Length: 115
Image 1: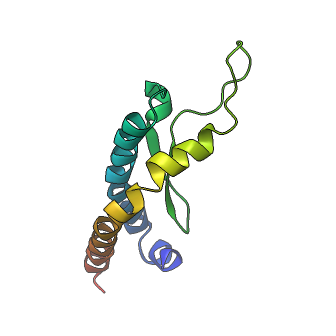
Image 2: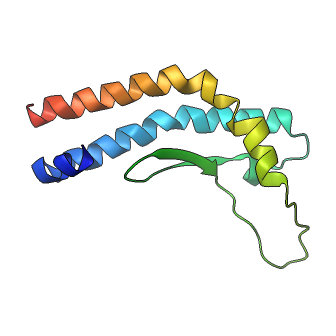
C-alpha cells in the first residue's frame, strides 16, 4: 500500500505515516505512566518512550539509550523489565484505539487520493 501511495502522491504517504505515528503516541504515554508506577527505581529519562515507524510497522521504544563510560552502573535486565512492566501491559489497553486510528488514517488518505 505504501508503495502505491508513493507512486500516486508522495505527500499522502508522508501524511499517512504521520497519522500512524500519532496513533501510537497514547501508547507511549501509557507506557511512561506504567514504567513510573511499576518500576520504583526508574528515573525520568529512562521512563520516557518514543514512537518510530518503518515501512512495515510502527513501534514504541525507550527514548533513552545506553550510556557508555562515566562510571554508570549497567543494568543488563532493565530492557526486559521495561518491556514486561511498561510496554506489554499497554498493548491490550490500546489495541482497539490503535486499530481505530489506523483505519481513520487509511480512510483519510484514500479520500484525499480520490480513490
